[in-house]
Length: 277
Image 1 (tube, rainbow, N blue to C red):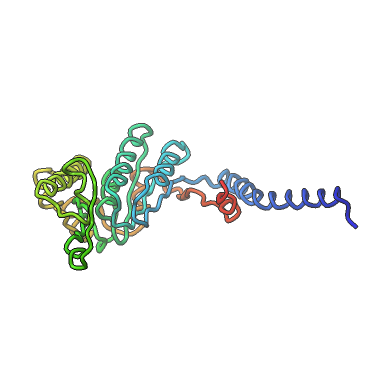
Image 2 (tube, rainbow, N blue to C red; image 1 turned 30 degrees about the horizontal axis):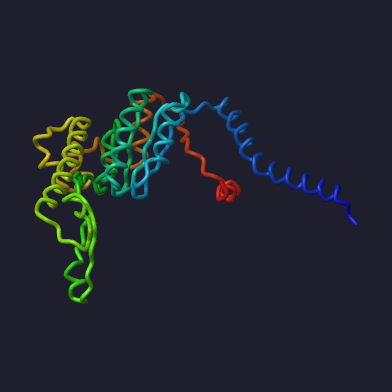
């Protein structure tokens, strides 16, 4: 029969082996990478992918800050395949790019294959160079407040009465069980107009466009990559190879092989423990 001391010793050994298996691969991989890099130096380029609707800036902001601060990262490739997201979040990320470029001067290039529209384009427009395919959907520079469904008449049909208590003539504007007044509608329109003005002003400034001609390149219009190039919403057409070649020739001025650096994803082991953080 095993003694308690022996069982404890076995458990300690098992836990040590488990931890070793968890942390050894990254350590060995890093040693191998450093050894190879010493023989064949590469240009390190940070790669950030945005391929989901943008409703939180936290993840992308951390990646941007990390890559801009890292002196080993010579440039950043922002790969976007997204139709937008929350206005405030997209604006925050766009401003993040602008501020980081000032603090840590470093080129950042956008590449998009299928769609780079609305808030996603807002972010792309703040980068130094935009490459897309000819059929990529570009633009949708506009502002919209989510559709408001008013259910008051439906409730009346079923003889259901809804009452709300609020203070302020505009507090019930988004309440689905009250009718919207002309004053409330005007307030929402002004809100949308102001957001649109901020969006178009920032794009015009960064892309060197005439704000007075925003009816041509904005107004919520969408363009193919080919047409977007004519309107100067992007800089060149092509695939990812073209974007990489642009970075090599115009930013790194080197034919040295590029090594993309990605933000490491947590392992299943780390994700399991993170559940209990």
